[in-house]
Length: 355
Image (cartoon, rainbow, N blue to C red; front, side, top):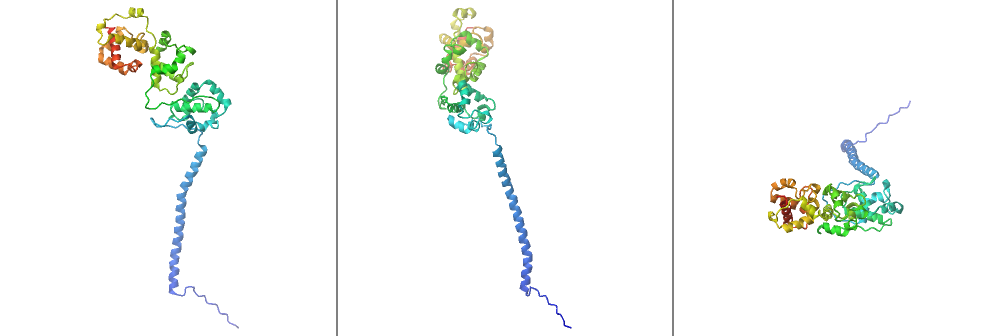
């Protein structure tokens, strides 16, 4: 019977050096695997916020509204832009495509109706906001001139021939009321066209003056009846426009001399401390429009009761109030061309009539 021999198994590790290497690898390899897995997890965690941020940014761009209301810092100054520049930076968001029923740039059929309303009216409407359009197209930092230029630019793309308003240099002084009336207001007020109160028409102006100079000026700035906003001069500041209203008001002739004497107590000229003749001249030209009839709370000429409380404050206080303005009365009665001496002479004349 033959004998079968079982083969002997021999180890791969035959030397002490091989044993040491195997032992070391059994520690190093698992450590390396753990480190690699940990690094992979850390890298994945770092990249996730970036991916999320990118995704959120993409979503925000897709759902971004066609127009935005921008809150601008007060007093921010910038160069006055032309109509095209304003359109491209503000108006194009809606008017380029006609989104939200905005009249599309160059659409003559839509713009012709607006053009027919007139430059001043649609400019004023846009400044206040109209339909789904917020005031000034949602950009409150736009100046009146810039907004008016943008309106003119868009209208001109549809066939209008409107002139973009000019912007004066900041260094240039404000226009006087008389100059504004001469170049613009007189076009209607000189003849009373369109129901405008005629220059010098006492009854027409005094009836309007009952509401007060501030209310009258505000209504004219906004535009009313047949008068466009700011009389069609969008570049005028509120102060300039107010001076024009006051100038028009001061063109009202005082009551007839006989009536004045009948209602005003006589006072010797010697009772006044200033130049009486000069004071009367200033009064007739600048003060009578309000003080002769007591318009807007002005103490009526010759009314001792109305003037009594003012006389108690003393001449210096009255001079200061007249020069700086008080209540509804603007500085120097709205006539900035008067010197302090002229104003004091007028105060002396008025107070002399009630002593």
